[in-house]
Amino acid sequence: MREQKLVANDKKELHLYIWDDVKEVKGVMQLVHGSCEHSQRYDEVAKELNKIGVVVVSNDHRGHGKTADLENNELGYFADSNGWELIIDDLKLVNDFIKQNWPNKKVILFGHSMGSFMARTYLIKYGPTVDGAVISGTAWQPQIVLNVGKSVAKKHIKKHGPKYIDKFIYNLSYTAYGKKFKKEGKTGTEWLSQNKESNQKFINDPLCGQIFTSSAFLDMFMGIEFNQKKKNLKKMDKQMPIILVSGKNDPVGSFGKGVKKTYKAFKKHKLNVEMKLYPELRHEILFENTEGLVLNDLLTFVQNNI
Image 1 (cartoon, one colour):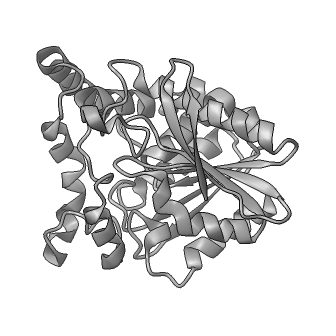
Image 2: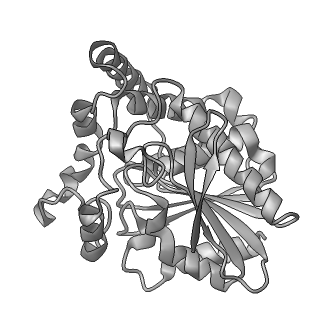
């Protein structure tokens, strides 16, 4: 794996990771990580993709990993405003980089958790630039929930500014995910997976688990809202193969209900989508102890579409 910088349209430096230990390149995966984490967590997954001839390219989002301005405590902060749009345009910049370096190779977009929402926005805005998509750990949010979230975030921005670390919204969202799993432990990461070793790595990682700013929460709520609008769903490529994958015990996807709602919405708009819900698995399905089950399914989808 090698690392380099990409300069975004607004001069922001993006930290890029490239896994290209491949003899004969058969395709490329553009990996979009989730909230409160970073691209390097997917090192082992990327290496497995390399083994089947797939290069993996991923950037740390604004407010995440090595892209975040750590000296100014910007973990969890995208921008004062329009952060979601900036991040989606960052993803297009990474896609341009892929096209320049591996021309004529098919590109599979993989997005997990918040990255799944970003991937969905990307498919609406820049769908023709990729050839397939894996949407992992996604959800469908009721409009009333999004309206309340936006309202609270806007009030906090007005009162405290866009860089305000919003523990109130965090507790209503992320902390609430752990309610069902309280009896298993008090780390607050039990909802991520049943893999205690993976959860402990998340806890120990200084670049994981940050609390979002009010502006970042507002950006995310607006991004999810954008994805769910019928007029935007109509813009998605009806031929592109898409797979929704999630743990049936994932609170982010409302224990399968939100994933099924997304699937039904995609089907209603005649998208080429399939869905796989894994019994017992939680949010981070790629880090669960499944003896390679989820990884093999991912590799199969990629191989079938490059």
